[in-house]
Each structure stands twice: as C-alpha cells, then as structure tokens.
Length: 131
Image 1 (cartoon, one colour):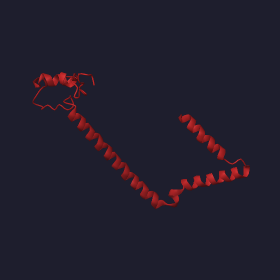
Image 2 (image 1 turned 30 degrees about the horizontal axis):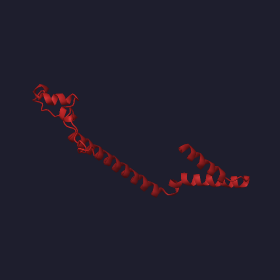
Image 3 (image 1 turned 180 degrees about the horizontal axis):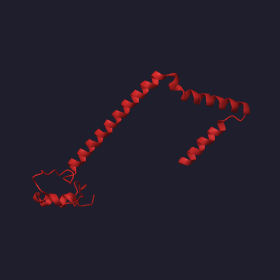
C-alpha cells in the first residue's frame, strides 16, 4: 500500500511539472535561488542562528535529562515490583553469600517460585449453566 501511495504522489508531482522549455528554465532558476536563500540564511541573520543554536543546545540537554529521568524511574519501578534479583540484592561487606537464605539464592539464579507461577487474576467464574 505504501508503494502505491508513493507512486501516486510521484505521478502527481511529475504531472504538475511544466512541459514548456521556458517554464522549465524559470522553475530551475527559482529552485536554485530558493536553495541559495535557505543555505545562506545564517549569513544574513547571524543573531537568529546564534540564538537558535543556544536554544537547540538547551533543548537537547533537557531532552537528555528527561530521558534519563524516565529511564531511571522505570528501572526503579520494575526493579521494585520484580522481586529480588542479583542486581537489587545488596549484601553488606561483612556478610558472605553463604549467609543469605537459600530461597534468596534460588531466586537470584533466575528460577521462579510457585508463588511467582500462580496467576494474579483467574478471570470470571462460570455458574452451573456454563454462563
């Protein structure tokens, strides 16, 4: 479907191009002048470009901060609800791994406990008639 859409837009664009040599030359000159005008914008408006660069730098810094904040919040949320794993288990330097309860060590290995395997939601109960 996307290829058909692209082909249709391209066909309309080609159909709108002028067929007269003089009109083609005029369109070519205007396209070149427009491209030059766009490329030399910062030469003509140095203060606007400097302010835009400053604002862009601030925007990028804020976007990075927001993404980092969202990532850390999601990581904390899922680490807190996902139970204990090797990354979230913090042992004191005085304790060794042998002093941790066996159930904790079993969960660190990535295995599931029977409680983990039981579903939180069972769905609707049916009555005698199966409804």
